[in-house]
Length: 72
Image (tube, rainbow, N blue to C red):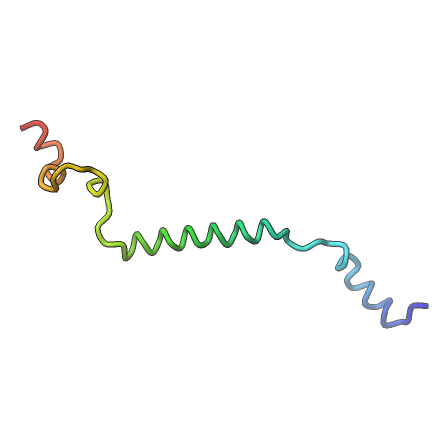
């Protein structure tokens, strides 16, 4: 038999026990995405030298001249 306090609790929160929590895969995906974004921000702010010239094998002087070096 339900008491008055049980009925009060049920009337204020009728669907509390029926709603499932967030799935584990969603939590893991969110944490991984947050870690990737945070890592990207850290590298962009404190990573030092980065840019298109970092991936080429040409000498730095040629890369820094840009189109002027190609057209000359």
